[in-house]
Image (cartoon, rainbow, N blue to C red; front, side, top):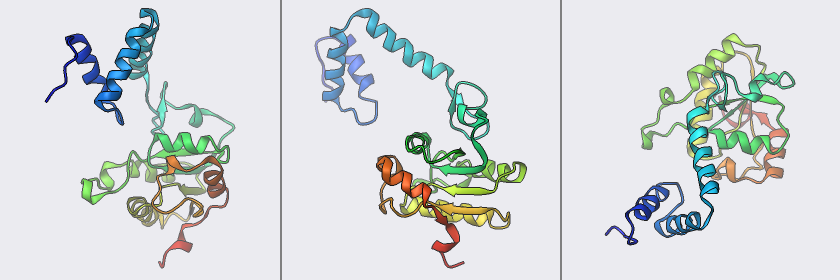
Length: 207
């Protein structure tokens, strides 16, 4: 049954807010009523910020991180070590790793993980563009900073096999990150140490 609040306008606002991840109908109502109590200018500023963000943020042509230009701030930063590429699942992982201050290289955002149950295969991810970067850029190391889940391990192994003939160093995070945890929920200290103490991928498997 659809909940109504004696106002079609409020109903519509609550319905839209409830579409956000982690927001149920009660929380959506609470947010909508909060916005009603704010000044019109404040709510308009919020709406404009969201609209401008959606219309103007794109994806970096190199690493697929969010960017306001063709290339993101990290890729265009001359102080970053372009020879070390940290491969992550999504943009939230870039943010998490950047917060540690331990990685001074660049990134490559896959846009997901291989998951047969969800019908997500290698062709659905930015793996080919990673292979092309290895072929065309002066890259010496790839860090597979993927969540230690079945999907993360499967994706890491697939990439390792794809890059096996390139001769570059392939490493993974030290297992300070608990098995089964998503990277974005790992505390900064643990994640930072896991990057700093990364280990060769080949040490984790029987080739």
